[in-house]
Amino acid sequence: MSTLPSQSVTEEKVNIKSKLLDLRAFVKERVLSNPKFKWYSRTVWAVSIIWAVVVAVQSVPYYTAIGAGEAAYKSGNYSEAEQEFNKALAESNHFSKTDARRAKALNNLAELYRTQGKYAKAEPLYIAAIESARQLGPAREEYALSINNLATLQCDAGMYQMAQEQYKRALQLWDEQVKKPNDVKRAAILSGLGKVYREQGQYKEAEALYQQALAIETKALGGNDVQLAVLMDNLGSVYREEGRYTEAESMYKRALFIDKTAFGAAHPDVATDKNNLAALYRQMRRFDEAETLFREALMIRKQSLGLNHPLVAKTFCGLAELRLQQGGKPGEAEQDLQQALAIQSKALSAKHPDVAKTYDLLGMVYLSEHKLDKAADALNNAYRIRRETLACDHPDTGVTLWHLAQLQLAQGKRQEAQKSAQASVDILYHSLGLEHPLTKRALTTLRAAHAATEQPTGAVQPVHKNGLSRTSHINRIMERFR
Image 1 (cartoon, rainbow, N blue to C red):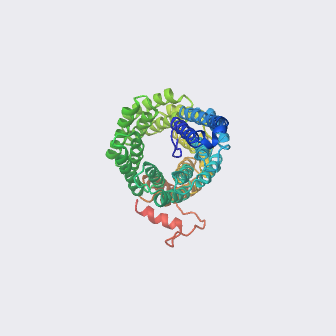
Image 2: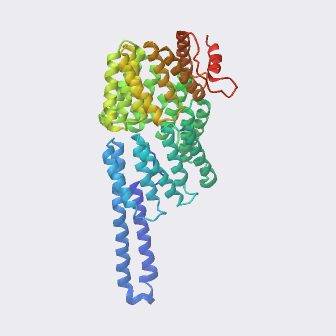
Image 3: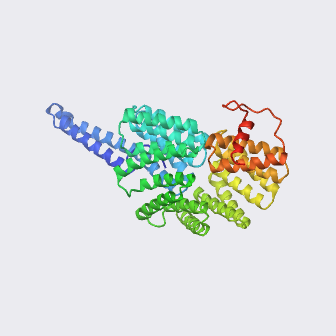
């Protein structure tokens, strides 16, 4: 969970106790021991004790709810976490506007909703957290990090341009107001901005930011801190997408070693490292190793997070995608995906991007079995979710359009296939670039659609920035791959 900078619950309680003791000493020295207040000393002492007790009693319900909510969140019990975080938020209404605990309560509840894909419920809470943190002053860490957390939501929702602007705003505030260039929280902002670039296929920019963040964290924490493992996983994913498999494997294995040493073999973070390494081996067509790692990750996640956690569903999807690449095992892939959908229907919003991913994979399974009606239902579900919840030029939307084009070719709907393939290439080319593997594969489908129709569409096309129509521009691109 991404939280605002704050002490642990235990540390905060100790801090309150320390302040109360300091206050008591002050009252004793300046009031009780002062001859001027000799006749009133007992009354004043009683009042000060009562006041201290009131402050402590007011704080206990908040800390209890925050602690219980975070424990429930980590265990995957989202309904209980929501109840406890709402209690903490209600308790924070008793505090002053400049109390950092309100910003933390707002942020924690927002993080819970973001994790569940409930973006409409999370966004106003993040905005309220930003306003609450702003009351603390721009030089406080909470303000920049609240903006950073909103950017994380926007990135998850595919609103990359907005997320990029917010991350840059948070980074500027940090550098100009907080002025802690080597703080690990600054590294977290850099990492978030790196993820935006990574999701858009801007891998060089992402790598540079991840390397900056990694340097900060290594200097501050040493070479084997668990926070470094997260960055190594992210950097490994950049290398994987670029086809730099040896470097990706090195990063994933380092992350796995750090987490395993720190937490033991059965920790959820170890499962994440194994899941990432399995995805790499799947891409490298090292299928046996990939399956072993996916199975190990699945077992850890089931045991540590419970059977209905979204991360369990993610691993089922990873296994299904492995089956698709192996070929000849569509029945097993379908079974994995149905299990993933069953979990997601309980834990996530119906419009969560992970649900769309599952439908997209399920559509390709049905297409491989030539179950065209079922494939159409699944792919249309994926496209509907992605079109409604992601940015219009999100690469995932382009991928589903590409898959729809493949389906339409199989159905003999050549004109529709050409239209879908063209829209897919348009999105992937502009969001990921010409050299990205997905763009190249979508171009292959577009060529097939052109060949099937044997003539370009007659529709008037939008004009591309170089003066060509987009169809003409794509035809020029296609020439490079003929």
